[in-house]
Image (cartoon, rainbow, N blue to C red):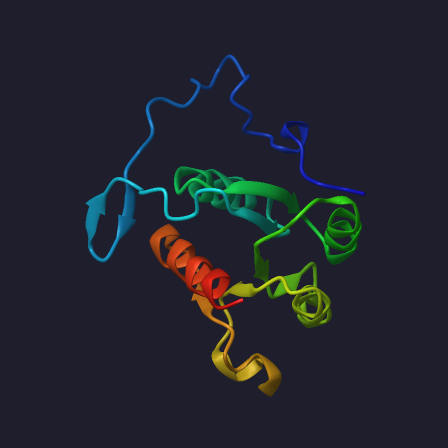
Length: 158
């Protein structure tokens, strides 16, 4: 099973030339700066994103909303392996394009297990198969407020 680790990041905070992160920054949303609430408290969220820096940013952002992060996973296979061995997962954020492979099979797999999905993508809605017409699609560049709210709505419905 492969998940990202800090050694994958060439911009690690333990690099003496780069200062470590400071205080938490406000999350942008709806055109104004606001501190994140705990919208996703007690929610376990699977993050599947193949770009390390984006996966790290998304995981940190979701944690600021109170989420417990599963992963992040850089590939479908890593996600399958993690889901098979993880405890309860409340929801998942999936990048549609994972190293050239579309994540629709993974979305089917997760939804069949009762795990609601939200897509993160730069693609137009037309790329989604009809069976995913009701799945929220957060457009890159990602806004954490939009992702957190979409995940919360999906989790409440399931």
